[in-house]
Amino acid sequence: MNTNVMQHSEQLQNSIELHSEVSFFKVSTVIQVVAAKMAEVELKDVPTGKDLPAESPVTPTSEGKNIARNDPREAGSSAASPTAEPSSKPGEGSLGLLTPNPAKMPQASAMKRSDPQQNGGEAFINRDGTVAEAPRMKKIQFADQKQEFNKRPSKIGRRSLSRSISQSSTDSYSSAASYTDSSDDETSPRDKQQKNSKGNGDFCIKNIKQADFGRREIEIAEQEMPALMALRKRAQGEKPLAGAKVVGCTHITAQTAVLMETLSALGAQCRWAACNIYSTQNEVAAALAEGGFSVFAWKGESEDDFWWCIDRCVNVEGWQPNMILDDGGDLTHWIYKKYPNMFKKIKGIVEESVTGVHRLYQLSKAGKLCVPAMNVNDSVTKQKFDNLYCCRESILDGLKRTTDVMFGGKQVVVCGYGEVGKGCCAALKAMGSIVYVTEIDPICALQACMDGFRLVKLNEVMRQVDIVITCTGNKNVVVRENLDRMKNGCIVCNMGHSNTEIDVASLRTPELTWERVRSQVDHVIWPDGKRIVLLAEGRLLNLSCSTVPTFVLSITATTQALALIELYNAPEGRYKQDVYLLPKKMDEYVASLHLPTFDAHLTELTDEQAKYLGLNKNGPFKPNYYRYENL
Image 1 (cartoon, rainbow, N blue to C red):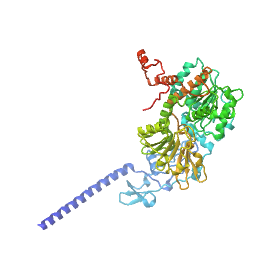
Image 2: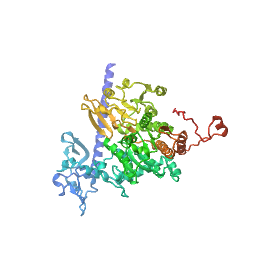
Image 3: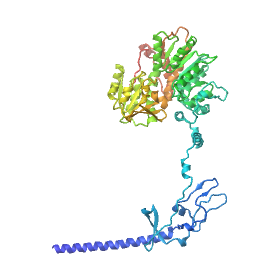
Image 4: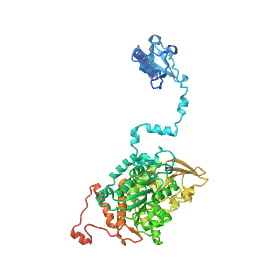
C-alpha cells in the first residue's frame, strides 16, 4: 500500500515539474517576442560623448538665461523623428537637441536595469543575452551655482521682490496685513514729515501711502455697521454735534474709523490717538489722515510714543477739546495730569472700558471728577453684546492666529467669569476644551458652576493647564510665582483691557531669556529649558493679535455716539459731576437699529397690555434695575 502511494506521489511531482518547465518556456518565448517588438518601436539612440554636437548643452537664450538638458530620457523624448535637427534659428536659444544615429546604437530590447554600484547608471540587455552599459551623460555643473544660491537679497531687494510678484497680491491688502507688514522702513513716524494729498500734515502715522487699502477696509466695515450708518443718515441734517470738539483715545481700527466719520458727519471735529500700542491698523490710520482727520497712532508704538501721541492730540494751538471719548482712562488721566484747566470747557467724558470706568468712579469718590461722565461699559448694549459675543468669537481667532493651537482636549483656566469670561468659556467649551474658572464673586462663581465649569483656585491647576486666560480687569492676577509653576509650553494671554493682569515685568530678569517667535508671540525661557508662550506681551489679545466681529462693534460704537450726543446737548444741570449709565431708552434704541439686519419684526403691545404692565407702548420696557442675563 505504501509503495503504491510513493509511486503515485513521484508521478505527480514529475508531472508538476514538466508542467512548470513548459509554462516557463512559454513565458520566456512570449517575453522575447514582446521585447523584440518593443525594441523595434521604442528604440532610441543615445550617442557617446564623442558624437555629441559642437554646441554646449547649456546655451544662452535671448534673455541671457541658461537652459540645461542633462537627462537622456528627456533628450530622447524631445526628438520627434529619426532625422530631427537641433533648433538654431537666429535670435532663439538652442536647446541642444541631439541628432539620433541608429547605426551606432546597439540592437537591444527596451528592458533595462539599474546598477546600484554605479550611481544609478543604466544598462541594456541585448537579444543575445549580453549586457551592454549605456553611455552616460556627464552632469553639468555651474561654476557660480553655489554662489548664486547663497546670495540673499538686501532688505530693499526683498521688498522689491515681494512687491513685484503680482499686483493683485498688493491689491488684496487686508487688516491682517497690519499685523505682519514689514514693507516700511524702521524709521519712527515721529521722524517723518508726511502730508496727505491736500497738503495737510497734522497727523503722525506709519505710512500715508497705505490710505487706499485702509479706505477699502472702512468700506467693508460700513456694511456690517448698519445702526451707525442709519444714525449718520438720520441725524446728518440736524448736526447734533455741531461745534463739538471731540478728542478720542480708542483702538484705531476700521470700525473706529466708521465711528469717527459718523461723528464728523454729525458736525464734530475729531483728534484721535490709540489706546493700545499694538491694536492700530496702519492702513486705516492712513485712510483717516488722508480724509483730513488728525490721527496720531501706529502699530508697535513704544511707551514714550504712546504718551507723545496723546499729548499731540490734546496740546495743539488754537484748538481745545470740549468732549472726551476714552477707552481705558489714559486720555482722561493725561489731561488731569498735564492740562487740568481744559476741564473748564469740557462738557463730558464717555468711557467704554471697565478699567477706565473704575478710574472714573475713584475720581468721583474722591471728589476730583469735575465733569459728568457716561459709563458705556456697563450699558446693556455694551456689556451684554460686545463683552460677551465679541469675546466668544475673537478669543479663538486670536489664539489660532498666534499659536495654531488645537483646542480639543486642552486644559484651559479662565480667570474671571464676567461677560468677557463667559464668552471665552463658552467658545472653548464648544471646541472641546476642558475649562476651569477662577472667580472672586460668589454670584458669578455660582453661574460658572451652573454652566458646567469647575471653579478652582489658580494655584490648584497651574501645573497642569495648557492655556491661561485673564479677563478680570484687575492687576497681578497671574504673578511670577504662578508663571514659575507653569508647565512647559503653556500659553499665557490676556483678554482684559489693561496690561496689568499678567505680571510681565517680573519676567524681564537676567536669568530668563526672551525669544521672539513671530509678531506678538514670545517664548520666555527658564534656565532649565522650560518655556512659556506669552501673547501680545500681556496686552489685549483679540485686538493686538487678530480682529473682532464688526457687527458687535457697531452696537458699541452706536452707543458711544449717542452718549456723546446726550452729554453734549444736555441742558445745564441735568448731569452733575458724577458717573452715569446710558438711559434705558437709548439702549433699546440702539438694539432696535440692528434688528432689520436679521429681518426681525418686533411685537407691539396693545393698549390693554401696556396698561396691565404699567408700561409705555414705546418703551422703555424694563426698569433700570433689571439685569439682562444670558442663558
